[in-house]
Image 1 (tube, rainbow over the protein chains, first blue to last red):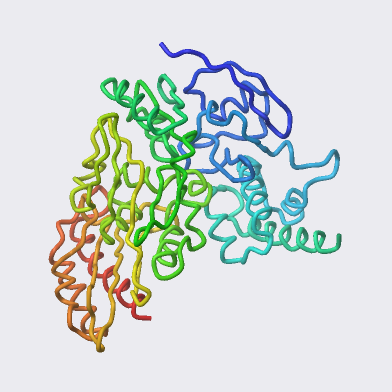
Image 2 (image 1 turned 180 degrees about the horizontal axis):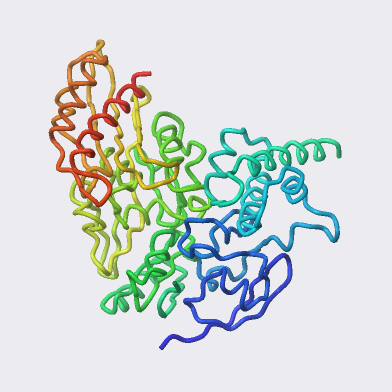
Length: 163
Length: 285
């Protein structure tokens, strides 16, 4: 038998003390043990990207990590993007550009794009296309997602320059 | 699906890691590095290791450094480390070009170079790099350390010379001379998919003709390897289309291609020639 592990996950700055099996994937722990259901589970083998989160600022597939591996790391999920009632520029850009329909893939796309734009605010359209090819969307045909991320990149750059 | 239960071990030092591996290897204990291949395999229940030895907490394994004429890549160095050239000259440029073909961005932030080499998928880009450039694999167990040359290391589909109690602590790549010309061409149906075929070539030009050519193929056969027939077709010839076509034809004839449900051996044989020629043209450009 395997022993349960007691650990603390830090999600969007809030600590969650949980007791889990080592085989618990990070995405299951985030959703079921910490109650943060904004992160979605799609394929559970790293192909679809619906479960993409930020781990110490880097986009990762949370279905391809075990929760025990995330102790002491800063986890960010879609719940942490908006500041109160004010949406994150990426969230607003997805609405403005019709970058979502059913919304299942959206949290993954938002976290992927957030992580990349924070690291590389000047990323080229070509490199962004390569990044966005990581995740699957079955509704939009991608064009509006790409448009939304371009718009958010330009807006985030403009507002950081204005400060 | 969810992975089957296992016991989790998180060593902090290499010594502790190999001691743990020695203890659990007979019970199907496995090393967990980036987990970008192992975890999906466990989710499908194709693997049900009883123990996982997670090496992510072993800080000594995160080393990426130039040691003399070699680039040493530690077991915890992630694919994403190569997005920007890690060394000046052709080697760093080549690695930064190749890395963009490995799965997708969020996989590259987590998956590791050495994990990919130890996993030895025939379609692995890093395995092709290791075979083409003649990498040295450093394997460590509780009994000691040995260095395995690439020609000895890859033994077939997901099969290597590593013993079950050995940890691949480091892969060493030769620093390429500044005038080395490199080309890499991969074919797959969608960006980020497993390669159906890929070629990595390097050569130098002396007095207008090709010297020291390396032509290696991945994704075509069970393991990546250099194709001597294609290299012989290049030596002493001017780097032009005729020479490249001759090398491509030789490569195509020399391979023993894999076959699967959607890709025939005949298709892969043809692809072997095409990727070889395109990689050579890229090196010449």
